[in-house]
Figure 1 (tube, helix red, strand yellow):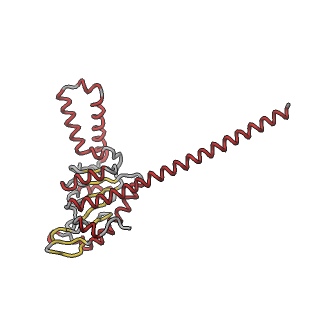
Figure 2 (cartoon, rainbow, N blue to C red):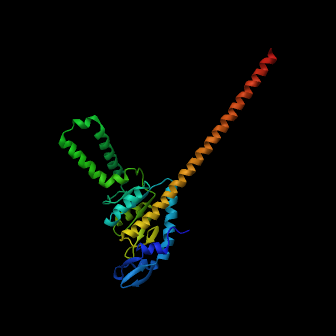
Figure 3 (cartoon, rainbow, N blue to C red):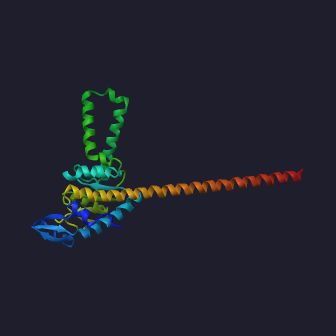
Length: 269
């Protein structure tokens, strides 16, 4: 069963592309028609592409790896922070820190710096600092939090990138491609789909369109995480059963040895 349908996408305005003069010819396969100088996206193809992307993103989440969401445009920030934060995946909704993927160790150092400041603030030595020193450190912490707060749990490179607007986030896309990290993206009629692993043809400007597509992706992630949890619980239950069975066997063996020893003693007497 498809995760969405034509009507739901239509209601969210996913079909509205850009003006014809701004189009990218490589998006031609995903364009249904032109109306009043504006390209209309073929929503039947969007349904298929959403299902393909959701299936792949679910498997990544099920494997225990992270998907990094990138959406720094104004209308997408809150939506992504809310929905993606709900499934504990990392996201960037402020300025993309250049080299975040290609120079990941440096980013990790900055995250560790933020964590060390947190520890310092809870330590007794914090009270010995002057007001000016406290203010400087607090400002530094706030700056780091704004840029890196949502990726503080990202201890290694993400398994995939999900981008809301490939034109706006071209640096992030370029870094992911350089490292061979799969890119999932909402791609509007003015954008370049070539080189992306999972293209979702959709209006990447309207908040309703962004919310719908991101929600469908986070729901897929939630399913993957739940399936992972169930599998691990089943594995633990099986391991527990095996342990109990082995212990029972060991106890029976020990009892058998004791009986043999007692029998041997009787014979000696």
